[in-house]
Amino acid sequence: MDKSQFETPLLEVLLGYAGSSPSRFHVPGHGGGRGVPPDLAAALGGAVFSMDVTELPGLDDLNSPTGVIARAQELASRAFGADRSFFLANGATLGLQALVLAVGKPGDKLILPRNSHRSIIGGLILAGIDPVFIAPTVVPGFNFAAGVPTAAIERALGDHPGACALLCIHPTYYGTVGDTVGVSRLSRAAGVPLLADEAHGCHLYFHPQYPLGALEAGADAAVQSMHKTGGSLTQSSILHIKGPFLDGDRVFAAVKLIQTSSPSYILMASLDAARRQLAVRGTDLWQEVLEISAEIREWLSGIRGLEVFGSRFLDGDGVFDYDRSRVVVRVSGTGIRGYQAAQWLTGHGIFVEMADRDNIVLALGPGIGREDCRKLAQVLGDLAVREGKGRALLPAPEIPSARAVMKLREAWFAPSRPVRLGDSAGRVCAEWVAAYPPGIPVLIPGEEITPAMVNYLGGAREAGAGFQGPDHPALDYIRVLE
Ligand SMILES: Cc1ncc(COP(=O)(O)O)c(C=O)c1O
Image (cartoon, rainbow, N blue to C red; front, side, top):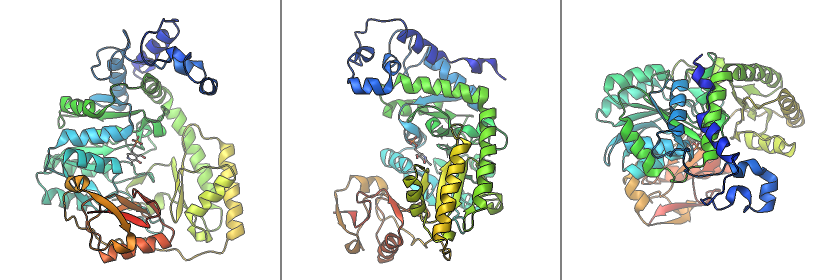
């Protein structure tokens, strides 16, 4: 292994400053902790505040790095096989939006899966770039949105030869990946950069039994929420670029455009330490996760009515491979909905990553213990026995197609107001609305709300679907253009 991966340059300098009993005449004004509310200090401990600093001599500057931050980013590039890496203090959201701002200009087109994260829709609004959506595969029975069929990508690249970029989700929230190697060949042949939303996948690079990381699979850029699976603190993330397709200076300019000018050194140092842990111990840590995943899958599969997503549901295309650390459990076969199962578990002190109508989703990571897994299997088993009525599995709801009647960015800036869902047919939607299942945005700003869409949304609401995006979460009201 590359010995330099044992270094944590940023963490070390930060610890050095905090431990030097400095006289602090700089922001933040809490003076290393003396000025913070005592209950907060007691809860978090003094060390956190002594390290909560800003750009000081020796600590470098995220927006113009030449010292320890530059070195920490370089080590991250080496660990992930990138050419250049940028630390982000505001989540993968910032990295995805920066990429969109970097690759195109107003009026350009960007090809992306319809189940893309809302941060990317936000990036398109900021940049004035128009989306070309491709429908993802919906996994039969589980009814969740996975990757996009490769033929659909090929078609979209052919139909939009001047597209400024192609985006893939690698892996999705449910842990699946499409054929990113095949897709990257297509994008390369078309001369279109491939951007990967790798928010859930920074650990993939460190163990051969997980899907390839997006950069390994041929993506030109990957944005990772290191905080989700990499062991860093919440919000801390990294944007990597690789190869000649993207202009690194332009990407950095876009990052600086929207990054805070006061990035948290605690978050950045956590990225430095998490990168070292992944590079040095990642294989062992994620091996253990694989073993625990195999056990919990076996336990849960033994419970009548439960079905655990696994290899036999792969289709060699949009559902090409999956990350074993994400466990999707279909509970609807026991007669209960995913939401109810999650609630039941919460009542027993067990919190899952997410639930939709049919499934619960467990995110396993190096912090997971076997005891917790046993408890989950037992509590879920009790629920299955208690309910156990069995219910015919429902197909994924048929989503009416949406038609943009106004550009996304124009719709964002146009005046809008909420109306009752039942009164919204014929209006133009002013917000982003995704329904679970299958987790695909059914409307984005600028799309027409048809009578079929009103019916669909009303039906989904009655069937207990969860909505993401609308101002009114239960969707009694929907925001429309004036
Ligand atoms: C698929 C996907 N992409 C991007 C993001 C945004 O990541 P972050 O929360 O780090 O900004 C998320 C967050 O949940 C996500 O699920």
